[in-house]
Length: 89
Image (cartoon, rainbow, N blue to C red; front, side, top):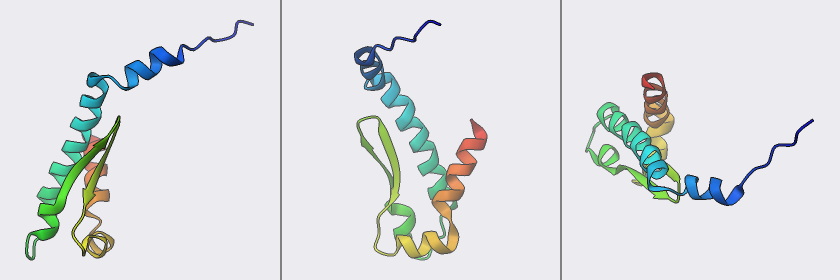
């Protein structure tokens, strides 16, 4: 049986590349766009707080107003947006 040999440095270089970061960021931007379009609007604060944060090759869609957790628990806006984006892929 032949053992697989991985080149960790090469894989790390690919994972940290601008191309991979671009794909990850584009996907997160799509989720954020869907979430903003579907967000309930009383004052607009929740909707306007939805944004993407990128650290390395991880992109997170965040709503960061004080009442975001309450809105998300009632509405599921971010969770629904993720599902919609995944179904488009």
